[in-house]
Length: 461
Ligand SMILES: *[C@@H]1O[C@H](CO)[C@@H](O)[C@H](O)[C@H]1NC(C)=O
Ligand SMILES: *[C@@H]1O[C@H](CO)[C@@H](O)[C@H](O)[C@H]1NC(C)=O
Ligand SMILES: *[C@@H]1O[C@H](CO)[C@@H](O)[C@H](O)[C@H]1NC(C)=O
Image (cartoon, rainbow, N blue to C red; front, side):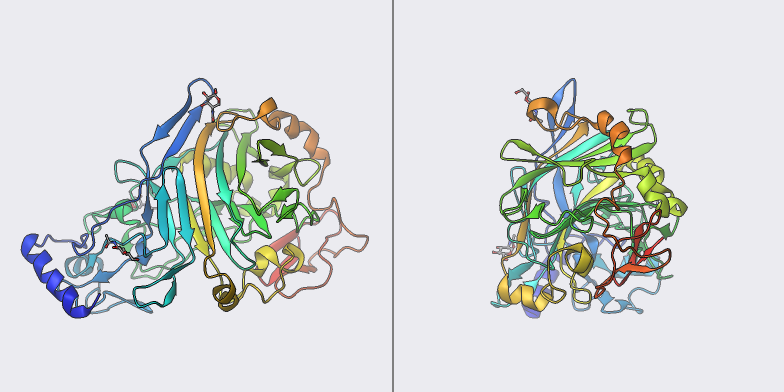
C-alpha cells in the first residue's frame, strides 16, 4: 500500500485507539492467526482435537514509529534514535500484525501450507520464506513435551526441488515468547525465537538485544527435507554452547541412496506420514532419552526402514554431542517442553548442499541456487497436515502397531549406523570426510564418526 494511504490509515487508527505505552502491537493490520487443527493422543483416551493456530515469527513483521513514517528496524539492526534502549524503543515503536496470505502461510482444517514465493500486488514474485509456530488458545506457544512420546504428521514434499528445505522442528523457546512490560504481544506476535545455531536477532527472548547476543537454545530437527533428501537431527545445547552440526540421520549420507526420493522405497512424489518416537531408557516420560526412532507410513503401509537396525539415532551415536549434553540433554529439553516450528527456506550461500548434495544427497552442488529455484520452481511449497502427538503407539493406526520401539533398543545395538556401508578405504582420525565441494572419502575408520562441523567441513572424530 502507498505511504499516503498508510498515513491516512495510521491517523485513523491513532484517533480510534488511544496510544498505550510500550512496544505495543500496532493497529494497522489486525493479527488474525490462521487456525490449524492438531491432536493430542493417549493410549487410553484416543486423540483429542486441540484449539491451536499458527503465528508468524516476529522478525518478519513491520516495526514502525507512531505515525508510521519510519521503520524501527534497519538492514543492520534497529534505528539507534528510535531504539537506543528497550524502554525508549517500546515507547516509540509498534509491531504490526501480518497478512498471512501474502506471507506465504495458509491453513485449511488440519493442513498448513507454506510457500517459498508469493506474487505481490505489483506482479513481482517475492521470496517470503515464512517461519511460524504452533500457538495455543491462551496466546502462548503450545509446549510439546515429547520425552517418551511420539509425534506424527503427514507431509507432501513433491514440489520441493534440490536446494529447498521444508522444516518442522522443535525449539526450546519461552512459552510466552518472552512477553514483558515492553513487549505485550509476545508469542501472540511470534517473538522469542531461538535455535542451536544461535542467531543474532534484534530482539532476544522478547527483549531488545542491544548487546547483539546470539539466541541459543536446544533444537530438535524432525523434518529438514525436499523431494530428494531428508535428515532428522538433535542439536542439544548447554547454555550458549550448542551442537551446531548435530548427530543427525540422513539415509543417503549413510549409504542408502535409493531409499528416499520420487519413485523410491519412500516415494516423495506422494504424501506420507512421518512418525518420530523419543524412546527413554525405562519407557517412561521422565527417563533418559536413549533413542530417536523414525518410521514412515505411505498408502496405509509401514515403510521398512532404510537402515537394517531401523532409522534411529542412539545415545551412543551422539558421543560427539556429549559436551553439549548429548542425547540425554536433548531429552531433558523435550521433557520440559519445546515449541513446534514450521518453515520453508533456501540458502543463497551454501545452496543447501549440507542436506542434499555431495555425500549427503543426489543433487548437484549448484542446482540448489535460489535463482535456479525461482526460475524453475516458483510454486515450490510444503503441505504439513494431521499433526498429532502423545503416547507411543497412539498417534497413528497401523496394522500391527508399527515397529516395536523396545525390541529395537536391544537388537539395533549391533548395527553401527555410520559404518554399515563403509567402503574399504576410510578416512582416519581428524581427517576430512565431507563438506560442501568435498569429493574425497566419506567414511571414517573405526571407531571414528564423520561429524559435521559446518556446511563446508566434516571431520572424523
Ligand atoms: C492479504 O493479501 C492478499 C494478497 O496477497 C489480499 O488478496 C487480501 O485481501 C489481504 N487480506 C487482508 C485481510 O488484507
Ligand atoms: C524469557 O523471558 C521470560 C519472560 O520475561 C522469562 O520468564 C524467561 O526466564 C526468559 N528466558 C530466558 C532463557 O532468559
Ligand atoms: C485409531 O482407530 C480408532 C478406532 O477406529 C479411533 O478411535 C482412533 O481415533 C484412531 N486413532 C488415530 C490416531 O487415528
